[in-house]
Amino acid sequence: MQTMFSGDNVATHMSKIFDGRCQTRSISADQQAALAGSAEGSFSGGDQFTDTVKMIRGDSSVLVPYGLETKGLDVGTDEDVALLAELFMIHQTMEQLKELKNYANDGAPDIYIFTISTIRALELKYGVGSEKVLVATKLVQSTIQKVTKDLVGLYDGKILVQALVLEWNFPEGPSSESLAEAHDLLKPHLASPSFEDFKSDLPQVNLKPVS
Image 1 (tube, rainbow, N blue to C red):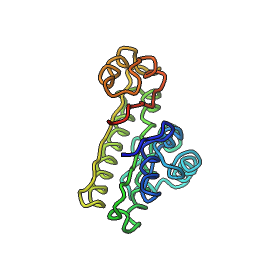
Image 2 (cartoon, rainbow, N blue to C red):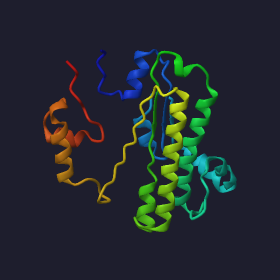
Image 3 (cartoon, rainbow, N blue to C red):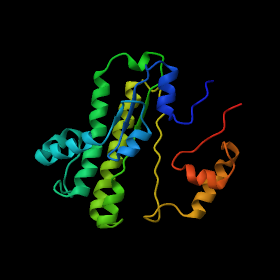
Image 4 (tube, rainbow, N blue to C red):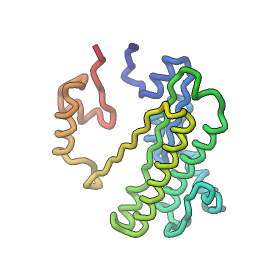
């Protein structure tokens, strides 16, 4: 067991333990989300996302090999093309991983975090039950299924794949009641039992060391 420094995320912590041999990727259109899940130099967001948007607007046929058909979505609309670009970056990352060799059997754990942050903007623009959001949701579901299948294949089944879905009921964020429920659930494992500490630390959750 090695103590995790408070400024490190899981990817950085594991990369330090295994002397940088871990493959780590954190992909998101939201640069803050991409950075939050990455080890140093492993995130994709910011300029790369902007370049991907420009590429798709210039030639949307690049989406076809990944099953990201634009039917129902408009690459000329910021919210629509943002979702397509985010999913495209995830698919591209998987293609890059397939081209690498030996990392799946090098004895060091690998961490991949794909954060889909663009659905919310579509919901706000078109409405939660709109046709555009329905199309986008199907694209997200098919991407998750393909990525999961590819990862299981790359690691010969020796992998844990988790999908975490966060759905806020209000644009301004989770209610005090839902935060209180989450705090009560996690309280036995928190470094500080204080609700105010828990709330102020979000989105980071500080857990007490394992004894």
